[in-house]
Length: 142
Image (cartoon, rainbow, N blue to C red; front, side, top):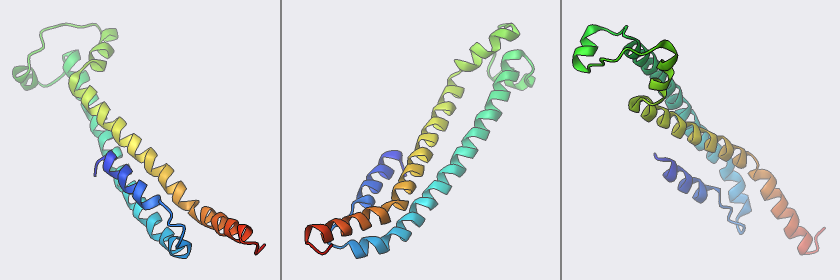
């Protein structure tokens, strides 16, 4: 599921039907569970992407410092001798690493969004209670 699809789903799920507040209240645990499952899935994806990035950083560092396996240089020659202080510049501008870093950032954004969505779901009971209290007040029950 993409981030946009997740946002659309949350927009739909988080809308309160103010005519059926009792049903909305009963839906809260199921929604919480649903988004916790998404959260766990994306946390695992994030961890894997971070590990993949760390492995690629090491592989690219070996490549740029001349310490990689000779087979790597046969497949992808690198004929420059760079100084150790300059290795970071090559790592930061490496297209493969940039692509993987973008993936990590994307998944981090999704995890952060899911964190906030779960907090909103946890607060639904307060929103429902406030809506009920407001109805009581406006109808003169209180």
